[in-house]
Length: 198
Image (cartoon, rainbow, N blue to C red; front, side):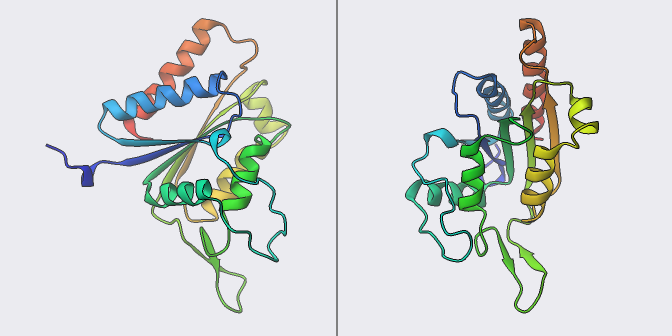
């Protein structure tokens, strides 16, 4: 029998502020399949956390982390695989998710600059990630016309910057015009990803 030590530790981070959104159905589809296939799964719904999303002093003065952010940091460090679920709004992700990243992905916590150098240590090396993002335009249009700004920001400028690799992406849309059959097919696709822990 597989021990808890050998089970993959998956953390699902949901950045959508509305729990009635399709993003929560997608997160649940991934979670259910991952649990059934033997993974340990924890969820963080950013909207439930009590914290100031504003990095008030930039990087000049460190703000004390609220208990919910300390909890989240611990879960991120424990996880083998991070699953980020969020919508694309104005080419980015929701403000509450941006605030979560601004407050938590800080020097000394998720990366550390080397002394007298422009290079840095990646403190989250050894972890992998999956981005599940929803849009209201064709995925090809978002990629070729706009250049995938939200994906580049989260994947390249945040997760890979901190050492998380590989980071795989699934872009789901067009959400607003999708039929129930189409939504069901997307849920099945995400369920398969959860079953494989990818």
